[in-house]
Image (cartoon, rainbow, N blue to C red):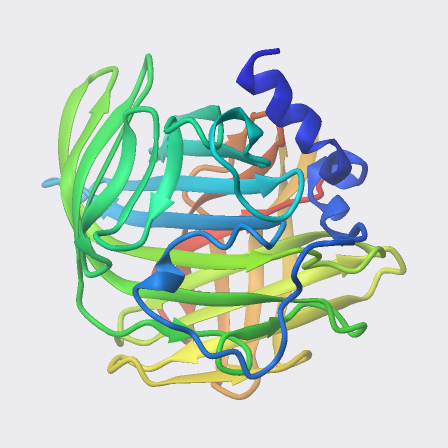
Length: 346
């Protein structure tokens, strides 16, 4: 059985619900679960946590070339466990898969990789930091200075990242609640990267620079069984402030939200359910489904009332587990740019 088929079988529990993500609410018997008042330890926590069922290293970037043309970039390494713990060789219960994408105003390129843990094909090392699958790699002497490489048949990139601010912890000191029932994850970000390098596109290489945001999250049952998907926003404003906000959609039509406000100096404030809201303004037909690609986003505590609009409405991740992910522009009370991820749209 090849690694791709095995990985898809591992993810079948997650694929029962809408577009492969609502299954994250299935029971996680035997796995560790996040608890409040966690004590993070770095650099160790930049590495993997094999006793938890699902984990990711998730990078998005807003870029421009010398002419001011905007681009978006994504690189994500996921770890999914058949059982808690680690073992050598093919006895390892860990499965790895990765997504890479580049979005332009007219095009969206995307590809994926799969690997089995324990054989060296993929993994994460905390110190010095290295996250890899085959020749794709996010690595550096530490989490503040990284290089990023990924290639495919029709696109690729080679980038350098430098952190300009501190790590940000979401929820209560990194304990991020996802539902009224109390499901949660450990969740922190490095939203202050400056990034530059080369995009390799069909029309040729393009030199770009901009800002990047890296999310780190791990859990075993991050959703409740009545949640069908999420809308996640990472927004960077011209003032230097930033905002992360997400809403989890529920089968009864209600939702659960959480958000973090990040000042330009890195000081952050977390907000519970109800302060952040996102309402679709218009949708686009994408891959045969209606997907909201323009939103009214508000944050009651910070006076935010903005329109968030996709740079390219066709940024559909047509992968084994499909979803929408792409760069966005922000106008209204605050101006800026960012990234939007949406799951659970059929």
